[in-house]
Amino acid sequence: MENRTVAVLGAGTMGAGIATVMARAGHHVILFDVSEDNLRRGIDTVHGFFDVSVQKGKLTDEQGRVAKSALHGSTSLADLAHCDVVVEAVYEDLRLKKDIFAQLDDIVSESTLFHTNTSTLSVTGIASGSRRPERVVGTHYCNPAPLMKLVEVADGRHTATWAHDATIRFLASLGKTSVVTKDRPGFIVNRFLIPWENSCIRALEAGLGTRDSIDAAVLGALGHPMGPFRLLDIVGMDIHQQVATRLYEQLRDPRFFPPPMVERMVAAGDLGRKTGRGFYEYDDNRLFGS
Ligand SMILES: NC(=O)c1ccc[n+]([C@@H]2O[C@H](COP(=O)([O-])OP(=O)(O)OC[C@H]3O[C@@H](n4cnc5c(N)ncnc54)[C@H](O)[C@@H]3O)[C@@H](O)[C@H]2O)c1
Image: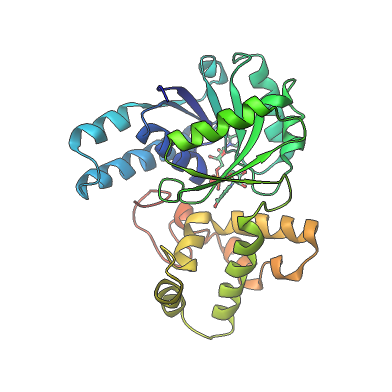
């Protein structure tokens, strides 16, 4: 697929990760955020990822330089006028997401694809903010987006076949594996990931193991790329709490309800990488490693 102009809205954990994916694939990327500080940190995270990729020999110096130069930051929606694809990764707030797509209707072209990275909201509900809901598709990236291959694809009630098919082709061009799912709370992955993460936290609370031994057990026994506490530190405890609570409210299954440790960590500001401390401590300013 030819290089496109891709706008990523929200420069937080997911936005920075998705922007990394887009820049690595050769697209021209505009990373947009309303917060200058968050935008700076998002760009630093993307640059840091490519620097480490070069150090590890995964990219040549030239590939690292080109990928970094593909990324541009913006705090003005007007800069998104020539985007082919918009990937929305702002806070998990229905009104906010609807409002952003409503504003973009007047800025981008009629053929621009709208992707939303929501975890718990209805794609149909988000799409109702746009006058062209047929172009809105749910694309739920796994975190950390540059390292995980899977993207769940969920159509809204009015998503057009052309938008769905174009989305699948676009994701394939990024080297992603798409799994098509329904516009239902938690899609596929969070239906079992959230209860499992809660189980790991409960195991820690019950003293079945330490942070390190539980992470080591998962790495050794289940073959996951990282242990649950390393992963939760990237996800963010605020996000885990929000997603778990919203899925509990919608599904009424107690396995989704976040254990007490989650609330205490959020209250203490120990959100994970984004605040420098979660289950582990971090001395760099990046939202995820490579
Ligand atoms: N964290 C995860 O593991 C994960 C995984 C998959 C999907 N998601 C979903 O991705 C989305 C983003 O999650 P996150 O973890 O990156 O959150 P985050 O809190 O790390 O980042 C959100 C960013 O959105 C920005 N923002 C807020 N309002 C904005 C606006 N009007 N325009 C532009 N930017 C705005 C904030 O400044 C912030 O930088 C949420 O919908 C979340 O449910 C999160």
